[in-house]
Image 1: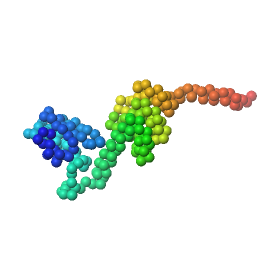
Image 2: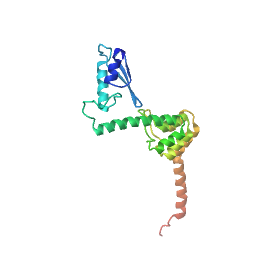
Image 3: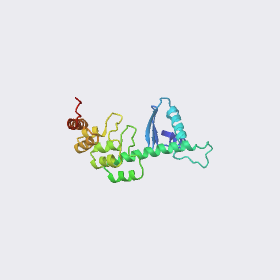
Image 4: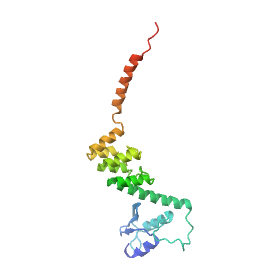
Length: 212
């Protein structure tokens, strides 16, 4: 932020960096990162509109990390706005933690999160779930726990249309792929034909003769 570092911390209160090209990189810890660009800059070399957006963002969602409520003259944030902001940030942190735990084959961590009421089907901004990451890394026990104990959807699609089964196949995790295939009833047509033939055999023995 060049010579405006102190002013940015006072007015925005979030980690960030800026360039004379009009770019501002803004971080909302444990939630997301933002890249803002508007070429008009002020005398400090900071994007004018980027700075304005950053200030309005922290005011709207109460994200300022150094804001003191004691001496604030602003209108208090409504309960609904506060809860909405807090719930959004909490959900984001929980999602990041969940996906990180699944990717690292931490079965105990997943069990604790499920016990504490976490949404085990939570998705990140790419639509990726814990099941996606566990299947991608070949963590069979985690995949089985998520499907059987947490009852998560076995075939969610991310932003690229990939399912956990696709991930397991792409990375050669055959045991995980075979397990997910069983859960998705990939052999349903075969089962259907078998049941149909069995039903035909039963019908052959139970046909009611026509009246003559």
